[in-house]
Image 1 (cartoon, helix red, strand yellow):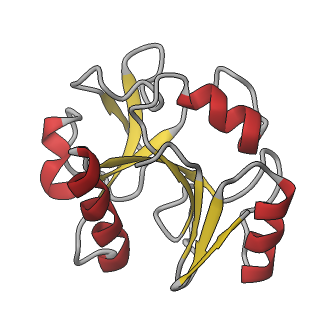
Image 2: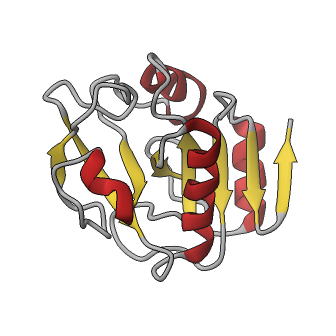
Length: 162
């Protein structure tokens, strides 16, 4: 909520092509130049590549024209103009819906972010630098924090900052 870029390392890693809330880099999607900030400080990838988002499933239809997308496989139209960091040039975003049954801890994080900002959505990208593997061990997440301008990483119940 303070414009920080935070690594989120929780439980078991996901299996598949996307970060679904256990190995993620998270940021407020309402930051106007957030895409450039996260690229410059953390991801170091091509400027044109879009970032995905995580949204509370019960609020998804207020922000996207697809209200159920638990695996971040489909692009949908963004229905508001207050999330420039996740809205691609064509007005779409590949988002991921989160229910409390699917991932209780991540849902609680989205709920807490919503209570502070009014927005139940976070920019969500994989916990890695561009072209490198996703962090698979806590030590790799700490190294990732040290090697980038990530502001913090939360591993389990511990928050590590610079």
